[in-house]
Length: 235
Image 1 (cartoon, rainbow, N blue to C red):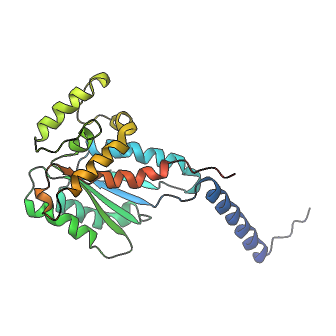
Image 2 (cartoon, rainbow, N blue to C red):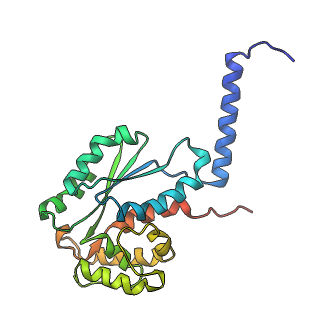
């Protein structure tokens, strides 16, 4: 066996062959890899626990194709405008690979103009990343309720929790900050997304703060869940 060091050209050729082999394997098993996505949430528990349930499944499924996570979730405790400022200031340090940044926040009691303007400011952001907004008016529990029923009346956040408690009796009822909330709801996601989309689109061209109840969380969830769909097998 020769102990002579390999030529640089041979090393590069072998590396290229290995990369090509990996790419062929990736395309055969997973036609599309997830985009590196940084999700910053206003809440520090309920929203991150829910969306982390999806993120963990994606990161686990595609772990052999990346040296780190594809999806990172960060609960911040910041509101609307502060959430956007946090994302812009921290994405390069916390998740420089990110190509998509999602802001996840509720209307709650924040000023109307802050709520109305945050999505517009985010989506007009011009840099190497795309910024998107996944808001709920009034709160994330609306998105959870839509997994079980349609809801068109503005009944308020306390009523959302009452409805969830009733629907989730067999799971011990609803409590904020449940770490298993995604696992409980995931089988109903397609139904919830359909309801949320119809609800949102029915408002037409009105300020976001007047869209109540409404949520765009379904867009974030649909974006992520498509990476969990198994590719069709060839003949």
